[in-house]
Image (cartoon, rainbow, N blue to C red; front, side, top):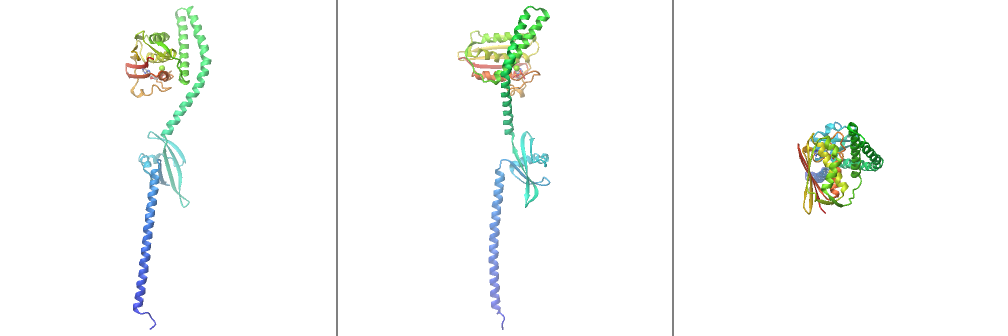
Length: 350
Ligand SMILES: Nc1ncnc2c1ncn2[C@@H]1O[C@H](COP(=O)(O)OP(=O)(O)O)[C@@H](O)[C@H]1O
Ligand SMILES: [Mg+2]
């Protein structure tokens, strides 16, 4: 007959099916293996972009997001994609109270540019540090200027004050008042120079026994001009026996600055009270005024160098106060509302 028998053909057919089934099964296994691999890869990719603590956004050429991580989603929901400039490779933005640095990289697929990868980094902390270090630089530059200033200005200033004092003796009426004004102005320039110096150089205190009543008297005497200009009522209350171990000169600067602020805060005929109390361990000096007060939102600012609300203020008065108090191991507290401001300095006696 020559042709295969029916049985033989069937057997071949079955073998062929067998082979087919086998390769199908192998293929299926391979697909499963690849799917699993793909799944793992995708998971890995996800974990990688989620573990970056920067925002990552892949966008197409129309700025539609293709892939993002959680960190970026917050920025996207706040609308960051609308304000990013696609042309800039790098930019820094002030975005909703945060500083962010945005970097863009081309997104390539087989050498074709299909969009961008945008990386958003929150640089608020760095910015703050940078500002702080700029401020420090400014201060240290000021320190050098201050030392020069001190030499160049203080001596001639001393002469001016001295000569005006001599002149005053032979003058009367309006001219006498002018001479007094010269003295007062040169004292206040001297005061500013001293403050700058104290603020910028390191303070080392030579402690001695200082009577509080004596230094308060001295300070009030030196501020007489300002007190009478304001027609201020100044009340002093405290035991003449109380004293503490400290630097007479620095404590005078400290008290001068606080009383000056009080005098500047009050209206014509306002009232400033200086009172102190203590025991064998501590003394507290209290300064009270009935002036404008310190608004709630500025209470954290007033000790910062250069913070001032005054047209001609320097903003270093209280910064110097806090340095001096700190150098004495003391503390400062204050409370304030309109018409009632109180500063309390507390020192240990020995
Ligand atoms: N007794 C006070 N009453 C109201 N505001 C005050 C008082 N003392 C300080 N301040 C506030 O604190 C700021 C900082 O004071 P200071 O460091 O002495 O600098 P300056 O007197 O040059 O402004 C002042 O500008 C003022 O706003
Ligand atoms: Mg001041």
